[in-house]
Length: 220
Image 1 (cartoon, rainbow, N blue to C red):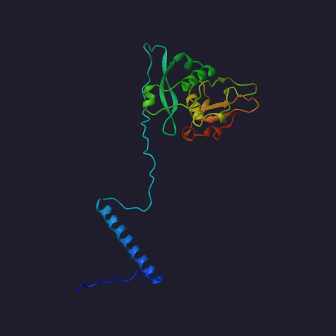
Image 2: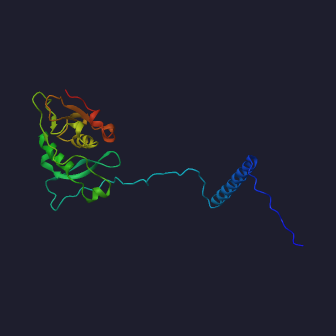
Image 3: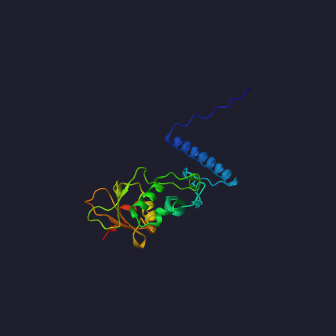
């Protein structure tokens, strides 16, 4: 005689539903444990949340390239021009006409150095990670009536210049005939009703992007 096997009816009660949910949870937990063990065996730390480490850091050398000058270097001298590199302004050596920096004409020296700051960095400077934020076409003139004798006025308000431009200007002018005593520079904008301010080439000016709006002191 053929034996017939009768399967138990599917439990549709609330208790049966709960039992099935427990079994599914156990299967899921066991599956995750197996995956975690496999990852650990491969030296990978399991994590439940994706981690965004961000882009790889960009490294620049900020190495100081040697001054370069075309052909005959007679009548030229080396001067420090401050460019932007790695979130600060740092000096590079440039060859400029010696006569312009050996005379006491502040405005002539300032115009020559400003032209150097506006010039695009050469290949060696770019390779070292240097750039300039001083805008092309920026102009500088002498003091207005009532200004201190050491004043240089720009045709743009210093507060409106790009972030590191003031640091470049102040630290490049300081210590040359364009600057004043104590490595300071007196700068103003085109509005002669706004008094010029005295800036010092210190650590703040070299490293804080917007130092031009906060570091200057009233000039006397």
